[in-house]
Image (cartoon, rainbow, N blue to C red; front, side, top):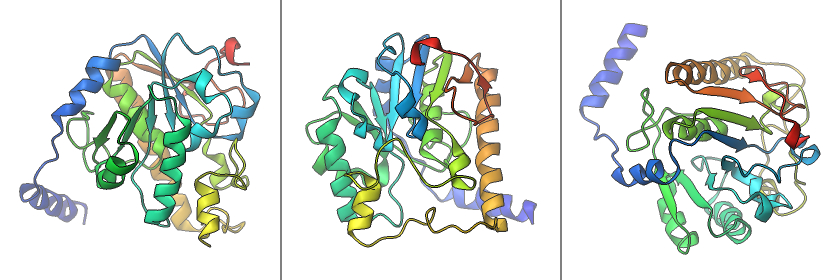
Amino acid sequence: MAILKKIKSKIKSLFTKEYRNIENEELLEKYGNRKRCYILGSSTSINDLNLSNLQDGLIISMSNFHEHSDINQINPDIHVFSASHPPLTPSVLENWWSRSNDLLPLRTTVLLEKRDLISANKIFKNRKFYSYSYGGNFPIDFTKNIKSPGSVAQVALQLAIYLNIKEINLIGINHDWQRLKPYRHFYSHDKPSLEYYLYNEGIKIHYEEKKDHLPKEFLYSDYNLYMTYEKFKEYAESKGIQIYNIDPFSTFDVFQKKEEKKIC
C-alpha cells in the first residue's frame, strides 16, 4: 500500500503545476540570517510572561496574538496565519482578519496561505503581506510549496528555518490542551477573537466538544503532529539551527528547554 501511495503521489506531481512565488525571496532579504528569533503562540502562559524585552531578535507572532494588550510594545516583525479551513466561514475570516489588521502595528508584515489571497487583498490592502502554499517537503523554501503543517506554529517554524535564524525560541506554544486540558488561550473567548466570531455564528469548536476518551483518530493526529516537529528539529540541526522552548510554563518537550530570565 505504501508503494502504491508513492506511485500515485508521483503521478499526481507530474500533472500538477508547482507553486512558485519568487516574491518570497524578499522575506529572506528583509528578515534573513538573524542571530535569533522568537515565535509567539497563544497558550495561557503568555499572561505570566514579560514579552517587552525581545528586541534582540526577529519577532514572529501567530493567529490571535494580536489580542495581546502589549501588542504595540512587542511590535512583531511578522504575523503568520495558517490557511482558512472549516469551520471558518468567509464572514468569520473577514471579521477576524479585520480586527487583526486594526490591532497589529502597521510595520508588521502578514504571511498567509495563497487560498486566502482574495480576502487578504481586501483586508490587508494597506499592509505588506506575503503568501505561501502547502503541499511541499524538504528543503524548506517559501518560494515553493512548504510542508503541510499540523498547526500554525509549524508554519512559523518553517519560516524561521527558511530565514536561516540560527537560534529559534518558542514561547506560548503548548499542545497539551488538545487532549489533557480545557481549550484555553491567553485571551478571553468571550471577547473579539476567532472563537468569539465563531460563537456569534453559532459554530461549535470541536476541541471544546471533545470527551474524556482518546479515540484512535486523535492519537494518530497527535502522533503525526509531534513527529512533524521532530522532522523540523532534525532538519534545522542539519543546517546549524537550534530550536529551544524557553517558556517556563510549557510542557511541550520536542525541543530542548532553555531558561530565559528576561521573560520571567
